[in-house]
Image (cartoon, rainbow, N blue to C red):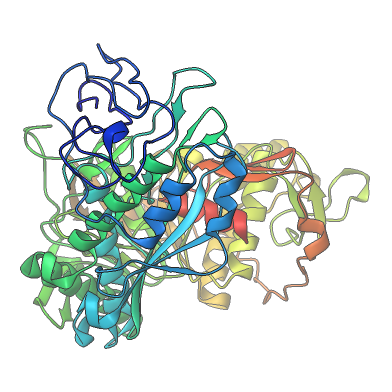
Amino acid sequence: GGGKKGGGGGGMGKDCFNCGGDHLARECPDGPRKGGGKGGSKGGSKGDNGSGGGGGGGSAQPRPSTTGTTLQKTLEQMEGRGYPSYKDLMGGAWDMEDCGGCQVFFDRVQGDPYAPPSWVRVRLPASTAGFPTEYVSESRTRNVALCDFVTRVLADMLRGGTGTDWTQTVSGEGWGGSKGGDINVDAPGQYVIPRTSIVITPEFAEARLTLSLPARGRSVEGYRAAQIIGGLMDVVKKSMHFSALKKDALRSHILSVEDQEAARAQLAELGLVAFVADGSILPRKSGVDERPMTTKDDPNLVTFESPESLRAELEVPNRGTISGMGIRKGITMIVGGGFHGKSTILQALQVGIYNKVDGDGREFVVCDPSAVKIRSEDGRWVACADISPFINNLPFSRDTTAFSTKDASGSTSQAANIIEALELGAKALFIDEDTCATNFMIRDAPMVELVAPEKEPITPFIKRVKPLFEDLGVSTIMVIGGSGDFFPVADTVVCMERYRATDVTERAHAIARQHGRVVPEPVPFAALTPRRVLLKDGLAADYKVSAKSLRCISYGNTEIELTYVEQLVEIGQAKAVMDA
């Protein structure tokens, strides 16, 4: 068959698909395979009557160690049948003999080779998986961390950890050629979040994957499917058996996540809304690479260090005392020149709702778990939102207590985003002036003189930010680089200079007094009474629903844009929104 560099073949040369013997598949006493194997893409050619063509280069793929199970034999017997025959795989568990009680379930089988892939579950009894009870049952945090670690190992094994990259599909050979065959699981990034790709309970451990069942034209490739299932079993043995994992790495991963969760849980009782640990690495490699920047990427890399006046300490169960900058409840401004790290620290804070992998650099950059990043979002859809705390007296007496539009402006979209966050119980808001509507944030004296307040429907955020905290207990952390109007209302002002933080609160207040800046007359913020109810009928899609990227959901004939929901970090979250 084709080697790795040759593109992979359908047959395995002189390793018989049927029995593994040292003879061609067509010579097997158990019966010939119908149809030829697929040769490698470089130099390979189609074999005849069951033999694989020669590969175009590279070493041959290792044979899966699991063969001859009932499921694999059933797949081999399907060879050459119509593709819908795969539907027979559904309906119950397939026991994988000699695999420690492992079972395979086909929950959904694709209707044709070009349809979305099939859904497969692989389940191991707890006695075979062997995960310690302290990791599985002691706390939800430990269980989530365990499942995350196993998912990462599973993804690595699928991508070549067993000697074969099972995530690669066969394609590009025309309608009648081989296609499909790839196994996939959503590979985690830098974040440790609850997922359903791996589920581990006191009774079993289960992996949930997608499998593009292989085909030649629209006919079943049963022998290749049997080989793929064997490869999947090898992957499971090296990723879902505790005995196969690196014990120290697993324990370190779990304890790190446990400490991060404990740090976040302490914030409220300490009067903090966020915390940035000393030594944190805030910059990322790039805008599309969430891994931490290193000195190889930039020799000027600066790790974070707290100003002494803002220093706080957290006690976590495994690492002990962690020192860093505590951001107190209230109104915090982050100021500084361009490219000095203002937005970098805010971006780290806004994902402080998540735990991260050990070594990320932001493990102990944590915030209130209800915190929401707010921005303007021109063109967004708004439905029945009460934006009257910020916008009223619109022309033609348009109602803003149940405001709806298919094309919101910058100010109305930002108002709606705040109101929606408050309805969901947010106790902290993150705001970067670079992504805000200027007329929503402030109105300076010359503009007030030119356009009288009674003619302006917008109550600027500067008049609402103090009542938001005093009346509703909602803190705000703002990056502001272009206006000192917020100095009088800020409880804390942090200046970023060359990525180093300093506390400039007293100086900012003095400058505000010097320039006659005073706290605007506050406008009380009444308690919200959410009245909007989602109607299931209103959410029904008019066609298929899919989420092929983190930034967009195709919902029937409508596209739901997620680009500005900046706290989404994995495509699995978009899929969860889609399925909801």
